[in-house]
Image 1 (cartoon, rainbow, N blue to C red):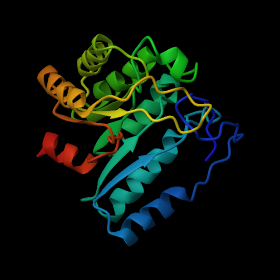
Image 2: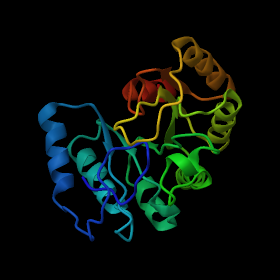
Image 3: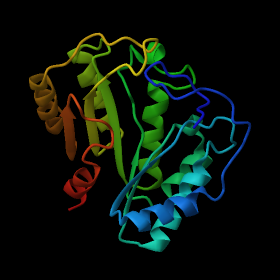
Length: 230
């Protein structure tokens, strides 16, 4: 529950877990999936820069354990950037997930102000690109928060950048500051602008686009996967 980064859009506590890892977590997650009868599962985590692999091996173990329990369960992993580490990305790309998501979060200009300094616009694009290089048939996904002060042109640039690294699914939602000290919201994007951006994104070539004020990165995740995989 403690993240090693301090992005200004997020309210998760920042700190240093000093390498602590719960190795039983994958088993418990898989048991919860069975108990709840879930057919589509989204796994995510805080950033763990204190770990050599950024936590990729724990993600991979959870994916494999879920699939071993029932191979028909679809698993989506929403991952940190793992500092772009090639070995960590290899671990996660080959773990057997159906979808791997990594969020770009915002446009290039706003990235330094909104995200932790260890994150990066180009770093996130390189992560998404590398996942496709390792596993070309993998479905990849990303998300943008809107209302941070970005322009229409910057949104379209980000969408083109994501599509150019092979991203299949994109979600667009309204940024809402989680605390008074979080990065301030610049504007509330009206639904018709979200609808127009969805059309633009589909025209760019994404297989599925979810856009709207209440949309978050896991919104309608199962439907998005079904749309691109049939």
